[in-house]
Amino acid sequence: MINILSLNCSIAFAPYLIDALSALEGTRNASSKTVRQGGSGLVLTHGASLGLIYRNHRASLDSQEASHYLATVGLRANVYDVSLMSEEVVLASVNDSLLVSHPQSEIWLERRYVSHLIAGYKTGQLSPGSSLPEWLVWSVAAGRLLLSDQRSGRWVLLGEDHLEEFERRLTRLTPTTRSTSPAPPVISLKGVEIHLQSAFKLARTLRDFAQTRRVSAYNEAAPEFKLTVGPGVEGIRISDTGSVVGLTVREAGKWAEIIEAELARLHASESVRGQITTVLADGSDGRFVLQWGDEVFVPHQFSYQGSVSGGLLIYARDRGFSLLLDRSKDACIALTPQEEMLVAGRGFEVS
Image (cartoon, rainbow, N blue to C red):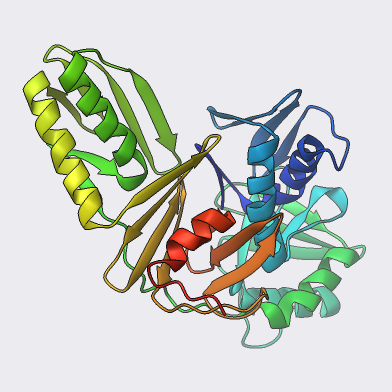
């Protein structure tokens, strides 16, 4: 998946996003449009900024943020070998599965199923002992392969070029070790979960309210969580996606101290550039690097080479950023040199 601020969309949209973000960066021309993949539409509007609308979530990016997301989307597209082919079919090799996406729907195929379909396309029948999942119906006619997903009733018609690409990718579909990295901590405020990326701003807001009795209302949204702060009956009202709590002036000051103490215990730091907030925090044997929907755990003494091959944690450089992609979770972060130094200062070893 691709995270862009509050949006979370399929990797199949990567080719369209790269074109749109490149236009904002000034390297390509693009026009406003709606593109469809996997049965969903992504609206791209061009102007002084790039507007994105996907499944009722909205985001607006300027040129600074475009460079950040061009780097992270580009690395994903490179690592997963994302290709926009004829008839708007997008293929991506994601670990040991092949994603076949098209405007109507998308189908995920395990490596063995890809192998069976290649053989079936060439001979017109499955090899003895091979089988496909019950929900997948296939047929070959006039040099075309028809795949039908019985779960959704959607289908896709593939040609010789697509099957050649299936065969090229077959040896690259390899399983990935399950991630053993820990989840970043959250702070519980009377049942409301405060994610570290929201903790700094909330602590400042609570302290300001305790001192001035004025509430600075705001909303923060990421693909996995939402935090809303505003005036309430008790004084200040805080809610996540499932819980609501009210705090008095006195309680607000106490909770500001609690959150600040927890952030200090984790040696957490915050940096903000445009709409992108980066939070670093200590884990048991490494550092969490959090950028909204993208959360990567960097083990102590992690050493990297300038390549995009092998391992769960992949490193690359692009557009002045140091990039890290966790293939087990498909999380990708982009660090400026200053942010990288903050990670390096607590065990991130550059080689």
